[in-house]
Length: 240
Image (cartoon, rainbow, N blue to C red; front, side):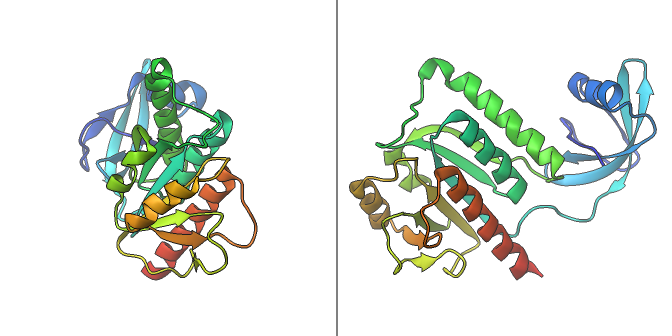
């Protein structure tokens, strides 16, 4: 079932006119007419039947979807800047795994650096990736994406339990699968070059806990997807 995020309030028995982009996708690409779709507005899903009206497409809202697709755990992924194609993979999978918020940051060992003249264009592309991934996996919300922040501002943006995936923490670090969590958590994943010792220490002093992602050293994009998967599984298992 195709899903779109609506740009105006919805109600059972009402109608919604798809945006030009949505109408093109539903009518021209998917050739829909009379099919049921899922619409989402402000975190609530609705079922609707789409109809062609020339180049426009309207959707007749037939009912509320009673099943929430969101996790019962508010997950913030703080992700260091990494190479473009790998970062875009992380954004897509984070949306699919149920991450609530993504903070992109630049630390001392990042091999990729933000360029002011490109930031707005990059953020627009990344938010499009998040929206498309959220539609594909039928989420009720699109993950929030911050602008790119310097490492020094990261600690102040923590929500809930702060978790630092630090490759030099050793086996004494808590396992991500067992560390106690509050109703929200923030997991920090470093760049390809890892964290400088003083950066890790700064987060620890701010109350973050070092966590282990296993005995192997993971690539940055793998670490982010692994962390999101473990946290999502813990959240959904605890909700059953």
